[in-house]
Length: 371
Ligand SMILES: Cc1cc2nc3c(=O)[nH]c(=O)nc-3n(C[C@H](O)[C@H](O)[C@H](O)COP(=O)(O)O)c2cc1C
Image (cartoon, rainbow, N blue to C red; front, side, top):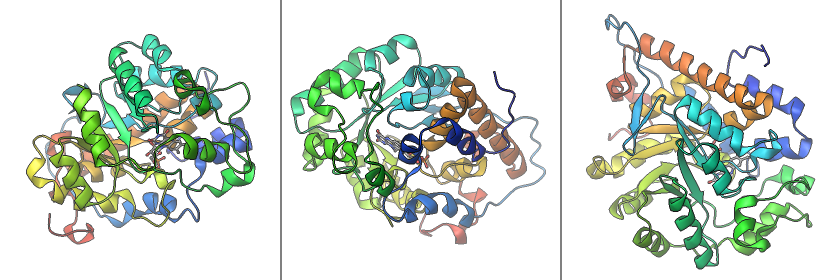
């Protein structure tokens, strides 16, 4: 076990870089095109100012919360990210074990390098969600969802911001493909054509274009809801109109721009969140809203929750801490978030998650004022 101390979340990336190939590091790090949204996801948090209350009489801070009826020890879940075996030998098995120890959600990516069943067997009691891409072959999509149900995954997060994969220039340059000893175990176990092969540019981009359905529509969401008994979450909602449409269909909402990896120059996610919360105000008792993108500080988490998100998710901090030190790295990363959140909540005058609200933010610095 390494005794290396990390003083902020960004430092895991430096350590990870030492352990990753250039191909893998670039894949994990990159955003789409000019990477404006990738940068803005992080920078936007500093534009929103906090409003602390003093003499709050707090002795301790409680970070626990409830998501879809399940208790989390910390309101930070693990977003679906592809190919964890590029980061650490046991890949997704290490991630699910860390998630269980932390007491939070692990969303298993469809593009995982470990199959669904092995992840389930490794930690049957972990709070596991499954992330779905809708394939051109709907029968395969249906079988995948039924398999997730059978294996005890507790929700389906269907990614709706990726009819095509965004253009990540580093991956094009590197002709990104999986290392030869790895496979997209989940997808390939359903259909061998899901294999990622090195082609002219990014092999992943090409596979995606061949197999994933760009023509997916709201009808597909209705179809998905018609046969699964699991809660459905739309991952990729980016404005109030789509959020309202999702809420009207009775699905939950995950505000994300895919970590700045899809359409470049869209807003940062914290800039989208107020509009989404306003649009679904009549559905707040039944629809949960989550958010990810650029969350690197305890105060980032608090800002999302103060605006009404039920919990947040992290992508790259998980990948980089996993690549830095495996399970130990992930635990250290969560401890750092915990520490930063507890200090910030003490200074803000909020003792528990449900205490957080709009009063803790300076209204003039929130992008939409009609909250
Ligand atoms: C390397 C990488 C792979 C990803 N793979 C997936 C995926 O397979 N499915 C998906 O829905 N989102 C995927 N995402 C997006 C994440 O779920 C999440 O939205 C994003 O990483 C959050 O931003 P952050 O990395 O700044 O925390 C991926 C992101 C990264 C960085």
